[in-house]
Amino acid sequence: MKEEIIANRLAELGNITRLRIFRYLVKAGHKGASVGDIQAELAVPNSTLSHHISKLLRVGLIKQHRDGRTLYCLPQYEILDETIAFLREECCINENCQKG
Amino acid sequence: MKEEIIANRLAELGNITRLRIFRYLVKAGHKGASVGDIQAELAVPNSTLSHHISKLLRVGLIKQHRDGRTLYCLPQYEILDETIAFLREECCINENCQKG
DNA sequence: CCTATATTTCTAGTAAGATAGAAATATTAG
DNA sequence: CTAATATTTCTATCTTACTAGAAATATAGG
Image 1 (spheres, helix red, strand yellow):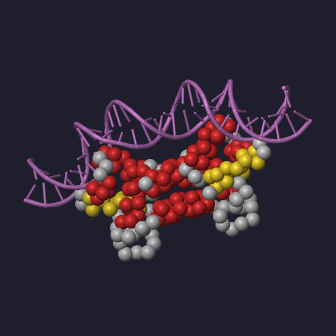
Image 2 (spheres, chains in turn blue, purple, yellow, orange):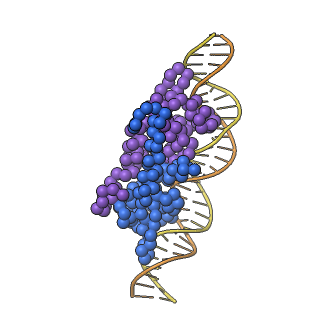
Image 3 (cartoon, helix red, strand yellow):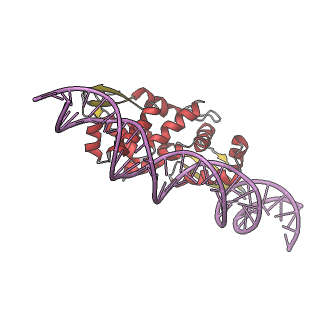
């Protein structure tokens, strides 16, 4: 069910550490950032960071690609946009307005 | 810190029951819906529902106003929009693009 | 092969959240 | 005041999530 998928994504973004990770990647843009970069930026222990990254991966908010020893994380803007759009979907359909 | 405020809101929306409550209110529009309406719609026990509503209230995603015995819940669209906007803020500033 | 770098997995302790029954409170109507 | 309706609070149980140290794996360079 779509509602559950959206809730899962929002829940992942609802953790302060993951929100920081994700925003760091959004700022980084399409080139993304390596796990090591994120760790240096946020000063989170590697095991903790890895755990959070895997959760963001699981719900599709980020993807990864390897370049040598370095794993790059890339934000998935379409997934973010879909998630955001869902919150506004059918806004005020039981009323007569176009937007809140 | 703003990041924490946003994370808290997203975390509240990240629970399936609260997401349903919130979306029901968004659909209802500016007139909102009563706690009883929500309960009838979602078939959640009253104590559970009350707990979830208080969490949405706490982070400002909804407000309430009483009319006799009935408590109406109203979605706070500006808070939602601010939350959404934060996720896109400073997108790609470390790159050269305008939007993902 | 050996070493260094990059990241994940294992493991475990601790804290927080979800759920709901039952009782309590609040409001209105008669 | 009494009864009915609307909603919250209390209490408890159960599950899930966060955190991080230590060990393991993966990749590349010499």
